[in-house]
Amino acid sequence: MMRAIRAEFLKLRGSKIPMWTALATVAYGVIAIAGAFAMKNGIGAMGAAMGKTGGAWAVAAARGYYTPTWENMLRQNVQGIAGAWGIFLFAFVTAYVFGRERKEGTEATLLTAPVQRRSFAVAKMVVIGAWVLALTLFAFAFQTAGMALAGPTDFAWSLLTTSLGQMLEASLLLYLSMPLVALVALWGKPGYLKPMVLAANLNIVGMMFAGDQFANLVPWSMPILIGGASWMPITKASLDATSWAISAAVFVAGSAALMWKLGRGSDAA
Image (cartoon, rainbow, N blue to C red; front, top):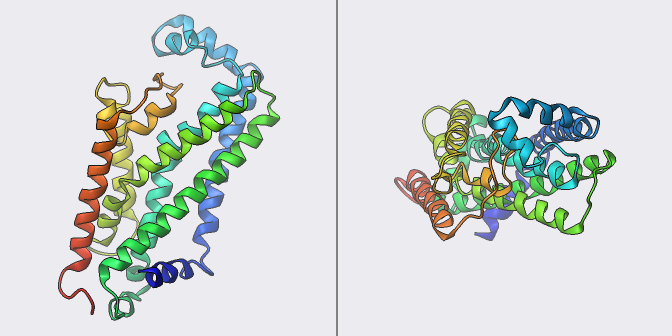
């Protein structure tokens, strides 16, 4: 198993995909930082004024979502993972890690190795987990540093640790659905389109139920609840044991299907 994990990490050497995923993280970070500067320089006040028209804007204004505080700016950290780049970037990473052998025509060599095919699946999920963690930590550091330049008010170290914890929690929830993405990546012709279409649909499902009373039961809505969302708006809510049990069940079911897919026929070709 350790040899399989080491081999999967070695495959990333010389690949430009990690760099491109980091650049994608930077691209969203720039947008988030620009939003922080906009909030600091009056657009937040304009949003509060629009709240007088009622609806979601009024609710968000009443909750103080448009004031340039550290808490409001840091909310964009978890919002980015939960409702913007997280599931798409993580799905792309998963599709790449699981689909590159088929895409590059090296699958036959992989399957002739004297190692159980399921070991490769576990190793790939370990690589994806490490990759997701690295992107999450990088996003937190980059975005938080940029937001600090905007000069938000009401700083507290606890806000930073809370934001980091929320980002890690949201990333973990999304990671638990990645076996489903990997399964789609292995089905049919190689490519990234189908996994990304699945990611888009999962994101739509998450958005649809994010403001619903049953949002804590929908795995792709749960990340949005962690920090709340200023665009609907949605109040943050703690996830209970049932929420985590459902997400864990999705991971187990997806992993079982993935192992079945990889393990059909001889375990070691």
